[in-house]
Length: 151
Image (cartoon, rainbow, N blue to C red):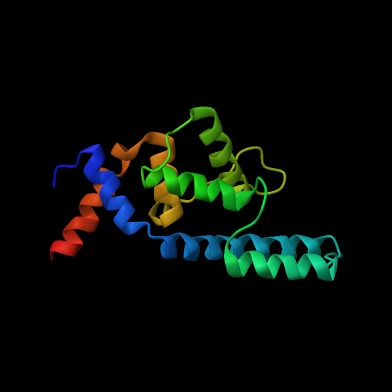
């Protein structure tokens, strides 16, 4: 299929339903949560979070919303860009992308994150690709999806 920006955004809107975005936020939250606890263990403070913070984190996981400027807001930003529902602002988008990459792929003591190739096949990875390079960058992925649906 030959994609236009409009048809690509329409397809991405069809794919990136609110449910898909919530599931992806939960998946990412779980990764970051496990990572945080591993580092608390590294510092010998595995019970370092107050009960109130634990309750709040459980609510964030359940409702996939965290107030303030944070990882969930950055994910929301790139998902809305991927759906064509937000106009890209390069500086703002770069800050959101940097937060996502740092949170998920930057190890302690490493200056730049290492992003595995498999990330670009996840819903968040595709949304980041659209945010970083434009919707044209995902035409090959949309072709694969369309081929699978047509088969």
